[in-house]
Length: 298
Figure 1 (cartoon, rainbow, N blue to C red):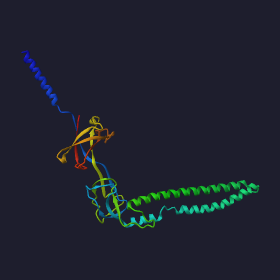
Figure 2 (figure 1 turned 90 degrees about the vertical axis):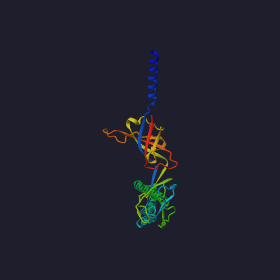
Figure 3 (figure 1 turned 90 degrees about the horizontal axis):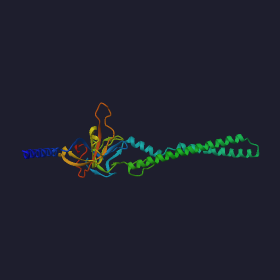
């Protein structure tokens, strides 16, 4: 009887241990989106008319690679020609300096004469002091005008360098402009999109981005994490990512950043924090916008 009781107890213990062993590990399941690590738009620097679009979505491009060839709208060309001809626009200050230097020469002659009279006791020291103060005042005005000219010339030099970067060549100070310009890629990566408006003959306004370029290896997955779970996730934690549109294919991901502020600070709403995970993407299977299921085993 005792042996039967002991065997029953051991059997019960084994069943309990087996049940404990069968309990799955705690799991945090999150849903997010695939995004690029870096995305840069290539905006039009001037109002221009498209001549040719040189890339398509998915094309690999290097920084500085041509994206769109275009020519300036007539009004934009007129403004740029005027800007080149006008240059630093410091002629007014230079003219003032010439006038002030002429006055300075006249006052200098008066000052020397006043000094001689004062030295001989025939002149007024007050008159000499007034002439001296007038001389110093004009000299200070000249110095300020020189500073203004220097600032204008440095500003124009920087602007000229910027313009020559857009045109890809030195520009004629007489205002002659090349007939064609090329919009280039701001970074190395892949063409993510080409605007529907970017077609030959279309007018694109300054600042409009006809092409965007992104880096796709690695990619980032952003997921909102509930406040009760966020403290159980740390930077460098490893997670498994499933992509439903790729038949739930799995990828390894590493937590690269966790936000410290909730996305919603309204006290009546639950708080969520943004967690970013980095996923290698050497074959470019993961595309921006893909839905991603992120699994953390805890």
